[in-house]
Length: 237
Length: 202
Image 1 (tube, rainbow over the protein chains, first blue to last red):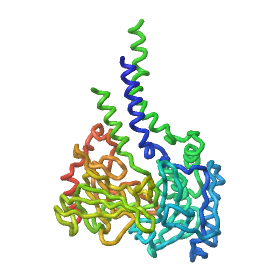
Image 2 (tube, rainbow over the protein chains, first blue to last red):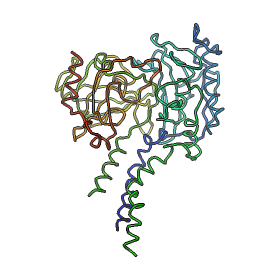
Image 3 (spheres, rainbow over the protein chains, first blue to last red):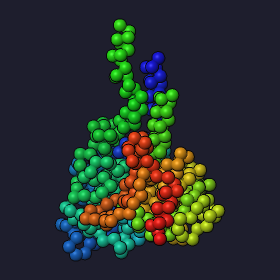
């Protein structure tokens, strides 16, 4: 009787939690129909940062390409591509996926604390378009460099936003690219890679990633079984 | 009865979950929230209206009935409308990573600007968004219960570039399931929360 009662609640809880899986996993709960997307970099300024903040990268466009290459080299199961073309429809649900700098987000102010915004368009659980817009307002000093991060590194923020664009939420693992505090990390970590693999290949070897988080949550009422079985067994004997 | 309570608690935790964070927002601290927000009020969401504009973008207009004013020029009893970029129209969703208040929500809101259209009109996005549950608990943007509000004595950014985790520095939260199990960390009441915010403003 106790078994059935707990199984019933686990199943009930699983169904309750399924629609809300996004925040329990390192996924936004949405993904692209195919594990690939092309981002156009032609709307980024042709130049690069001034002064000493450039790190072996002369232009914003080159840094954007490097950001996608770094994700691709990590073999995440998602293929990012870039094109130096200028796109269309960067404020609508149709057209190209565009990386750009702007002082506004489609005419709307960023606000005091917004570094970059990703406009993610979706239909149901399917991502159909993503535009990444970097705040070009003067109070933000953008640079391009690896290593310690006293300034705002364009390439690192681009990689972080590309992670969101591919369907990743923030992680709780410090040091990962998708961790909310930028760190000295400038390459995808195993946590980032496994989280993406969990979305697009279904393999979930990450801690707390994929569907495992809410599945475990749903099974919590069953935990008592491990302790009650011997007891019940003795009674049965 | 125990299992029913457990199921309800866990179901509530699931329901507290919100869409993901798709933009990079700087972490702010409580002093910034209090001093740089144009207005701070306790209110109830009485309506939300998602609309697609002529350019094909989606905005959700949220109507708040103002119940109490902590700072700024808002008036009690007034209904104010804030525009959030994002929402769903005809099955098409635009997600900027904003947590858009829903009809019936009761909360305390730190408004960055109601005159200048912003992607998210709340200061620091979810860092300026506090929901009040029917049991009196205050839920911060990280979906945890607020247990302490205190001034911070350090620079929020420090030597690292810190992005928002949904909660401003200086506000301490606990997961809902731990609130009553941690000694000396009871949930802060709405009265205490509002009093501390008003005191910081002065």
